[in-house]
Length: 281
Image (cartoon, rainbow, N blue to C red; front, side, top):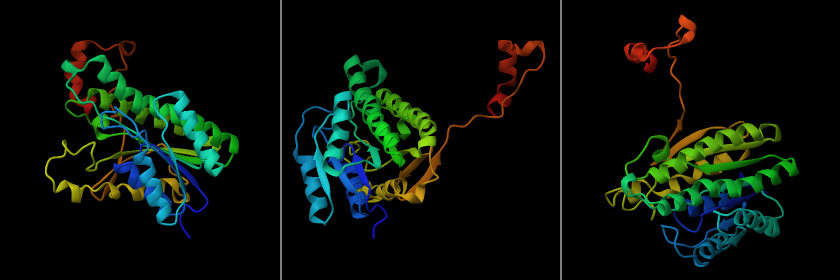
């Protein structure tokens, strides 16, 4: 018996890297998996069927159930087609893992509109395009579900040369918190992960080749299985850092701050400057 027996999962961008490990791990625990991948390069150019097909064959060879999807997450039509693919193959969806992504890194001074739009389209809009139809399907079924989004430390902590990627990933974190609130009555959980792993997306960012072992993408997958399973039935609106064997919660925090009670609460800039250490404490 697996933790996910009888469940159906969609994993976008699961033809390689972290997404592939998600798909394999979910299938190993009994889930039927729609393996979605456009089959393009790291920068989002090109397309093909080989990447998704290979993961599907791996799952089937291990005795699991899987079907391929080659649709583009960055369009509303693509998101709807991904849901349809899962329904046609397996009849329902219990789990959605929004993992698809591309990189087009440049410093802001060199960031043209095309570089910005492409990354926002795949990461942020793509998360919306896939989530909305699946969310509505889960609501209509009335049996709840788990939506797992992919944020990043680049968005939550910042990273040089990734303003487009960081903006998209910070947006996904905010999107996750809002969807979690909207899904509560329907039993739909929505959480996010900020993963760190050595993949084709990060191989030239993470330095030494030894990172391949210490930051293996398969180390991310157990958290996905947990969040997809009933073990996490009370976990929602949470963002997890995960990588290299470490899991922690990433939080948006607000300091206690200082309240100005006199003069109707109107601060002067000089007062703010004088009391800034208290405000930030």
